[in-house]
Image (tube, rainbow, N blue to C red):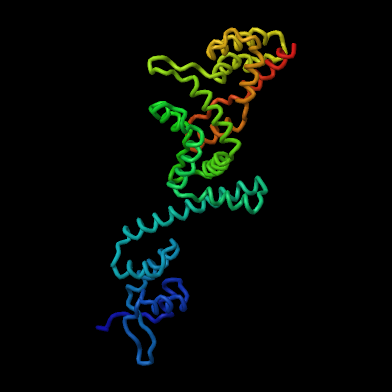
Length: 314
């Protein structure tokens, strides 16, 4: 071959660090072709085969398939094109692995039944469109028919309860999504949130200029929150003025200023609102959407319920 240097397959193996059978395999696949053969049929390779094999080894270690590698060494594709395509494929694989890891982590914590395990896997691997349909079904069950004209207030309420799992979620966000999706499918939880939505809708003004009246949970948060934070026991005399203010404010905002048994009525309403799953939903929602952690309402509601029960029995 014009007096040029040619390497035997053994010499090529020594120069590249690859096994003879590996080089022969690449040669048979047309990735690194011999430049010539001896009279006895032994392969001989040109010096550029050393560089080609070094590139092949690098691309194989990066996980590329043989067909794509052949196209690179034959200059049908540039290394930049291959790198971009392979990086995209790896991103997809990483997302799948994140989902699988999150499901397995939840399973390790819960000891699920086979049916629960199947549901968790299904929820974790839903497409963005499928996730949206699932949450839309939950929000329809909660809000449908409650907002006149389904205007801005309706849209804002739905947005405030809609999770948006990012394209590349963390393991923690995936676990949060699985738990939130399970909650949204729970008929009892749906009914509980629906009752709260109905109460809130009943307080919305008939006319836009009139501000909506605060619901009883918001009133309890504003009045009893300081007592909870200050460590005031609901049984103590120090709680009496808080309960009196809470009862009076809720009676006014609910158009019941002359109610003969305000404690009993308010107690019933707060007991209906006492569902720790609501706090959990909002915590999971904030985690998924990367929002600030919400204030927990359960301690304020529990304090108010205890204080009202004691005074209702007196």
